[in-house]
Image (cartoon, rainbow over all chains, first blue to last red; front, side, top):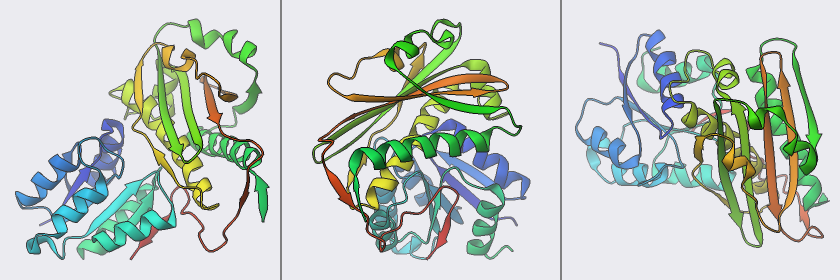
Length: 123
Length: 179
């Protein structure tokens, strides 16, 4: 069965692009609009990989990763940050929070698919 | 390497605009040029029907900045064919991409800033909102299939010099880093 990827981003345009890209690669995709919705969707189960923006209303991406990773059930859940941000300090902060990858927008579709497939073992 | 803040900001603004829109424009019809405040007011896109504008802030110690842009619906759709169900969202995301590039550049000079969440709306008002006391840099971007205006407002001490830290290169657009 194909892995399910959750895209967490407040931009509907960006979510559509990610859904289109991953669907064409035969991956299942679910959507959330901010960190609160994203954390709830992850805790509900069935998510194999997360792609998450940083700057979002209600709860930002790093806060979401921190909250999710505090729950031992999701210690091994791969979370990739997909953001306009690229500063080394922020990348380090996300890594320490438990993220396992970082992609700077705008993303290259083939690179996104390759990263997700690698992290979900579905290459 | 020490540089005047103004040089860093203006160079990166120009690079980010060209980089983003050249990559979105799949033919040779791309051109961008600087605009004075008077030239902005004369641009046809401001009085066109069905336009959308967006703005996003970037703030840090002794720095206040605001980027805004406006374009026609038809142009916005052609920049991202098939994905623009909500033009307000897309124009906001464009402003976010441009200001994010600037934030990343400043981080290489150890200038820490906070990127705001974009706001967007129908019509050109967010471009026309005055940013009091701020220096203004503007570009008119022209494609085969349309045009848009991007304005960057900045308020800081222009005599400030920043030192580039080669040990803190920012990740660039499209970069993938797996830990």
